[in-house]
Image (cartoon, rainbow, N blue to C red; front, side, top):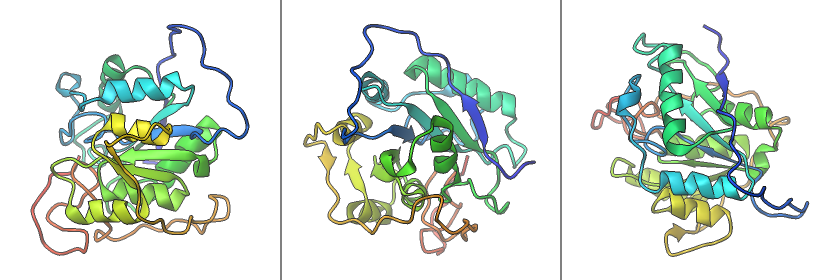
Length: 257
């Protein structure tokens, strides 16, 4: 298996009205918005290869539609280690993606990591490879992009790529991950709140960051990524190592996808 991520074109968009106005060079809105899949856009079903089990998260359709309406490309960055584990195939991954697009509309790019936690690839979140690959496909600067996710691995991947990060916690998001977002990123109570935050229509649904770590160097200047140990902050679904917390200590078991 190649150590590179899988890249997929989304379904072509169908025009449903006038095109959004052209953006000026000083427009502060993001150049692209990248969403985590499981636990962010859709309910996390570990190793899901069944389109019938795809269920959108609350406000997901409204949130993605709002980004599209602003004329901003949308993409998905998703770990799918079920492929490496022999539990998923590429056609099954694509079938689930098609169902997500039936429910949430078309995405401009899908960047998928099919590798396992021990494969040493540079794309499995919290590594930045999926974010960098999606931005390269879209032709946008990662520093002008936003990653929205539900766990610490999403935040770390975004920050390492130089992108802005927004956390939308779920009941399985760990306190240390929420604390990480409060210190180095931003937090919103749901996807629509996250989108309003990044589009500049801040509401009570969005919690601004208290501080922000210095932005890492641009992707072209950054040192090559090396795989991080299982102790890296992670989450449920395909980003969290089963039975370990963010510090590598034994904890509750969450089945990865």
